[in-house]
Image (cartoon, rainbow, N blue to C red; front, side, top):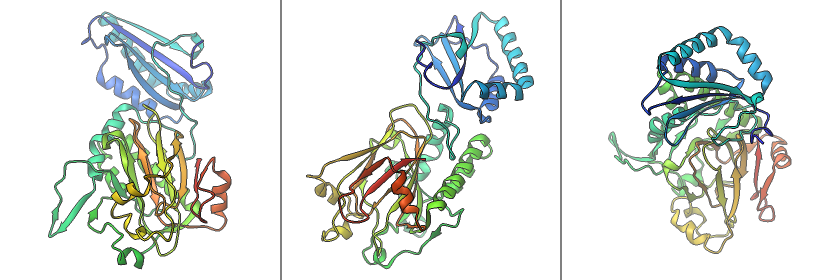
Length: 383
């Protein structure tokens, strides 16, 4: 049986076979026009380009949410699409290639693997194609590297990526509170680490990749508006990036303490589906009476001693997007990276709006540490 038969998508397959590896019948502008037409449509789940090992056969796979979505897209774009098809056909007539086209209703069985994409939600109805994933990794991640500022305009010249962290500007009613006295007193704040805002960084792609700029801009506003439904204020808000180009994992760590115990509220967004999903590993929350509590944030090596005899617990983040709530200042945690690109919108030490923490508890499909101290449990659910 066709392995896609149990999935709801409607797929259009365009197969091209050539005689030599360097043979390419397509005009690059026609390909760009086709991709633009597809990427800008809310009816398209994803576009996949597959190649055989010998590079003589390629399969362009366009995945629509369902057959109705395909019909709407085809009607909306029939003139532009037909013009591109005519140019493709002319190109094939001029070179020795074999072109064929199938859809989900043709019982075509592809030799290439399939991906099961999650349903769209209020944050995302798109998936990054490899070009944009690589664009993000090449152009954005280096700017999120954590570097020290020494004063007098001198910045640490460090080419090794320790992580990727951006500030998240306020685009909602969520207040960013001033630093607490406890953070200042214990030097529990990375005052010398400087960072760009994510809102600023994505502006750098508005001219050369306008589609990407529009999508990311809409996403960061949607995430902030979603968080605004749950929380009224926070210590700070950042965007962390997860990808294996940053190493095997995000280092074991805790977040900075506040004058009172508060939860960290995180919206995790998965942008690609090239690999296994990322997993969060966490350990028993640190007790309030631990004398090293004020030092774990600034000296992560102490955490390795703390977790030595503790059981690792994991949360798999395979959803298109999800909400994670836990006491990150007391719970040692790390994230295992894969070849998929993730964004983590992290709001630290939050105040929940009335009744919204109860909503989090009701929605959560994953609950950890529920038998520990009050407000030390971990909650996770899909958006």
